[in-house]
Length: 180
Image (cartoon, rainbow, N blue to C red; front, side, top):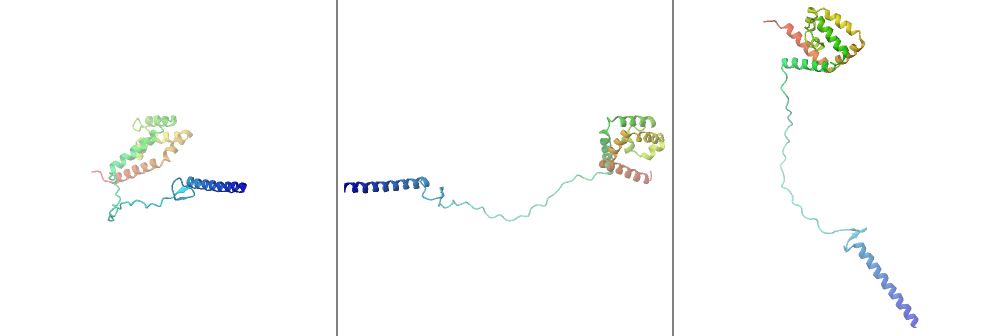
């Protein structure tokens, strides 16, 4: 009988320890918070009340306004075209074939035409009438591959083309106007 009582006492102690261990594991899972879901604490507290702003009346957005410069006067357009041409030709000033062309051009025109810029920005017909030797200089240098390549690069520039058109168009209107 003593053996039966000892056996029954041991079983009860083992059950009590299992319950204690289960309670410890449950407490470890909850970490003191009574509400968890997959070991993540869940708060059932209501969120804090946020203050609402007063309603704002709808206002149409202002139209977008773009400020532009005043259009250029005809004189400013001519000046801008001349500066553009000079700038483009300036990029090629160190080219030896262009330097030689400019020197031959000055010699043929007795210094009246200094370089390709003068040919592009002034009235070409009047220059050639005064100095027919310019045609020979142009045809001589046009046969050189290096010079032809430089001319092609300059003349294919869209800004150069637009500037020459502007100057030629202006020179035509100036010729049509009677001189007072």
